[in-house]
Image (cartoon, rainbow, N blue to C red; front, top):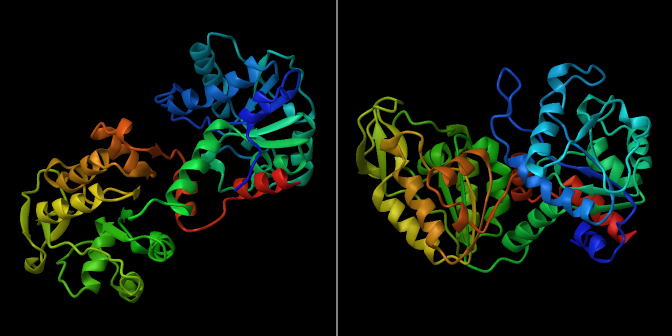
Length: 397
């Protein structure tokens, strides 16, 4: 998809002296006292802001934080702690501006943070009047918040409609490039790993990928449902028996294309769901009625690892077992290491996936780590994200 890139505008000298409005994702976790506990998103947003400042722009940045009530600002909703942390990282003071929709005073080379955009009435419903007010504040709108790209809100979509210029910031552009490389023009074989507790939450993703991928590896509770569909017993494991027809349809759709959904040949079971539960490795055909399947077995993990090492492109969403428990982490660990060792281009997303990547220290070996949970899942479903759609329209205007 063709979009205007902020980096190109900077390179072309079109940013100096302009008012630049950046929609970042600064929605960071805080403790009960309001202290920021993890600042990755703040750090990730800084390159775009510094790019604008170095180019001589007057810079405004905003984000949502938490779940405020529209029209009712409370101290806990404030971006002040974010501005303080960003200021520390950038070595400058950053003023936080309230009531900013009717006008902001900011000079070239200056940076201000506009208070929590979700407090503005009409934000979530993409109110046109609010969007036009925001657009009037700037000469260039920069969308750099992939985590919000699946939402059509006033600060993500409406402003992009009405701003004189609307473009993608470096974070958003990187996501678009990685997604295109993985799904639109993949080097094959294309292998997707989709895991999680429920087929129902990822059914549309599974159906969409079944039309495109060469191997569809399922894990967690999803794998249990597919094992049932393949005629295997799963004891008292988490599964959705009412979705067997859908699971079978995915298997058949893959088979019709000469592709496959590998079914586990061995599993790791326990009698209770607990970190200290004794783990038993057994053949997938030997699962007892009172067994809980909590991981794939070593034979299955090794077979999948071999497939991943031969892949051209890997899309990873979800751990394949209860990796938080040491006795049931081997499957996810082996998969993670295989992805790290593979020469394939890999893209990974989703909270649990990011936790697994961090646990096994493979951040540098994954081709691209997506920061947007919901947005990443909607891309896998084959949907066009609202942010991509409007930026594409504006690029063609």
